[in-house]
Image 1: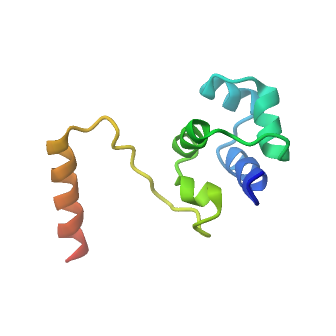
Image 2: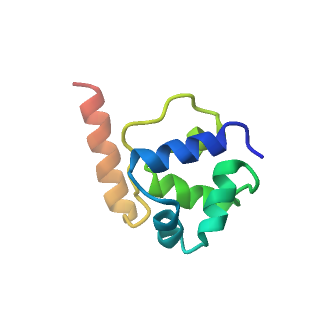
Length: 98
């Protein structure tokens, strides 16, 4: 079990006003698995932690307890091309220097 993960998952689910059944449907797993994650009876796989982080718009570091504060914005860049990623990176650098 990952310390603090069950409470974080339950809190995030409630933050987004989702039921365990809805989360299960979105992740293509059974509601009993979602319940197990939230009670600490089950530990999500690496792939499922990543899916949960996308669903709840947070980092895996937050879920694993490495980061203490839940980030306010997480961008999914998985479908961007290398050129698009570079443009986005340049834009962020420009904004940081203003």
